[in-house]
Length: 88
Image (cartoon, rainbow, N blue to C red; front, side, top):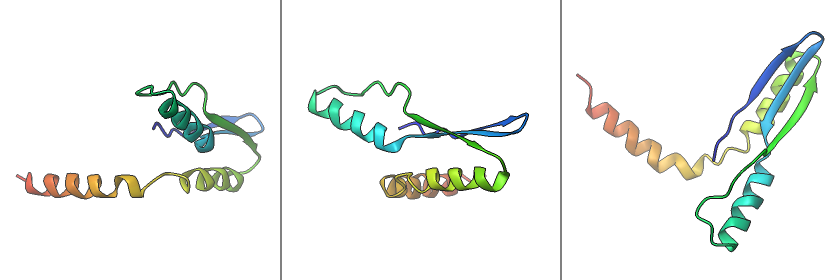
């Protein structure tokens, strides 16, 4: 799952693009039902406009709260343990 957040500074505010996790999950579920190994995600994003940096952070925080961290916790722990063992 690709999770890209984009903030564009405009002349009179900001444009914030965040992943649409619900749409991503629906496409993954449909691909699994159709027995496709990996679905084409296409444009699974939501776009917002914001006037202030505080409004930008609100959208970013909401998006980050949807990251499925638990799925990666074990892999991250194993990778960091491996990296610690590689110190010169």
